[in-house]
Image 1 (tube, rainbow, N blue to C red):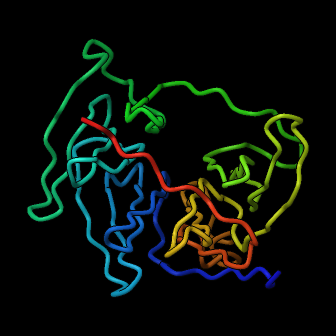
Image 2: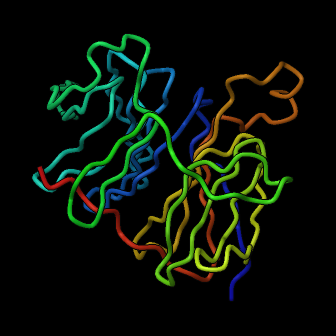
Length: 227
């Protein structure tokens, strides 16, 4: 097995990067910056970043079977258009709750886009801090980004046993996904909000997007929203 390599591929100092999704058709990584109300698409070939700025905190983004992508914005499901940088509302929930918003969202194998204001998480060991975004590999094992833990860990979902730990050079790791030509690369988002000046000096790549290679395992393609 080749040795594991960690590289910061996008050092834009995002406030709170989240919800990374690989778009195979364009060799791009989609992700959101929640408090900046921004959905991004980073082209791994040209290294360029496209952005769509929305009107509320955006918590997740997903591919769409008919083309383009969809995102959870505030308490709305929105379709995004990269060409004119627009967002069209598909559905709205909890209209009577002004301070409410979606916390996360994922598409299931049937093509349904699920989003929730509260989420269940796996119980991890104390030193792992807060479990955040996760993905699954071809062997059915979970990879979990640990917020305030500066690492991604691999778990056996049946036994709860930790199988592997990959440490990153930033503390606020938020989520992860597999991508690249054959889904052998892992991409990890991170945050910088809440860090003091000293912490930012010690972690200049905080808020960046990281690529991990040499894991020796591949991921599965993301499921697109069927609507």
